[in-house]
Image (cartoon, rainbow over all chains, first blue to last red; front, side):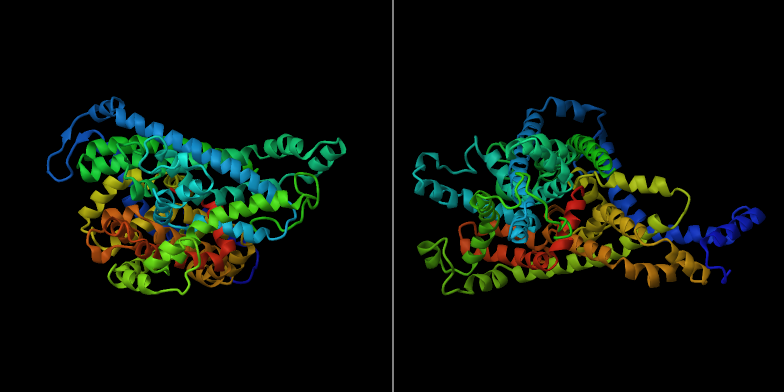
Length: 314
Length: 289
């Protein structure tokens, strides 16, 4: 077996061995090695991801405080309660508003910045580094920084005063009407750098001859941007939107570290609501029902995302 | 970073090599740059200012800089303890993740075994599961294993939850290595472990780097898992310590800024050193749950 340096010879040897005794010992041994290689991941995954996931669905059918030995099977009661729960619908609505703000910010700023960077400009690396800096920050850091920006005597209000726009000043995180979009902007600060990179990579994949042809036809910069750049980026833009959507439903840290869902639940989202129900009210069953809703929403968004990504790779 | 974005010089979508109105390009880019960088930078400056300086020049340079805030956060604010805890958990996460994701990634990419596709798709589902959605049963699982309030609970959960994405990253790296390598070694009588360890792993070093950096970033910055699993203050990580700290010292901006500096400086330095790996890795790993 040590002489023939061709993989085909191994295959034929293997085939010969298989012919003799079904699955030969060496093949079985190699299967065993492969299984040993994936065993650690599989074990962790099954015990700490898969089982809890199934358990969430299972717990959602119980009324349980998490401590007592007996839990009461309540059937669909938790889900009925969920559908009749105004806080649940508010939380969904908040996530949608959050998504709209984050998507609008990421697309508008991301497309503009990517288009400007796509040219042969000096200092592109520096700009990109700067835009990406917030992406690697902890969301608690983002939360702290933006709490100060939005504070009654913070940067934003000071700036508005200076510009003579004093009538716009307010306690941004205490004002029911603006607190949700204000936090969504803070969250966008942390994500737009990624959108710039994704959109810029998309733009640089566009066939340059398209622009040359358009230029010959006398198209201006604006026409080219909307008639060539945007349509060519359709998949990339959809990915940016879906990423923001998934992020919007997963967000927890920034809200928890600033408003904890308040004031008066105006920033409550599914993750903060289920955290409160589960770990503060000890309503493990109901908290799990919220988690089921959250999982289903994210599952759908992720499947869409993966499908588009696969298509985009072709 | 230059690899994530092809270096090739292409004309700007406006159709000009170098737009004539250069300021139309640079002014918006610079405003956005300030928007991105200034909030963090000003917070870092504040960490070096006395209360007096904060009042007199809230947006100026900290001159002369004081180390009082940092010292107080480090000792009285217990950030030295949080820092140590964060470091222990993140480093354990990185080591564990590098080992198990390279083993599994290799098996999925280069070995053949029954059930391979099924197991791979099974892991793929894990990419979509948000942590918040399983945090309640995960907490109960840790309680049943008597792991609550230990480093292990956070380390294990961090690794288990992020493993799928890193297995996929490593699988992609191993798939790209030339196919003749392992076959030739097999013919020479090397066993699977030798092939993996001596031939494949050294070639997959860039992949391991990505895994290590991203896992460090995510575990260093994570709030939810340590918040739920770690009860005693002696075990808290920087983000959790920061969360409770802000409740106690809300109005002391100097102290809070020092905390932000301690939390954000390590990842910022890593980012500046390994920009390219971070940008590429995060752009491809943006799907993580």
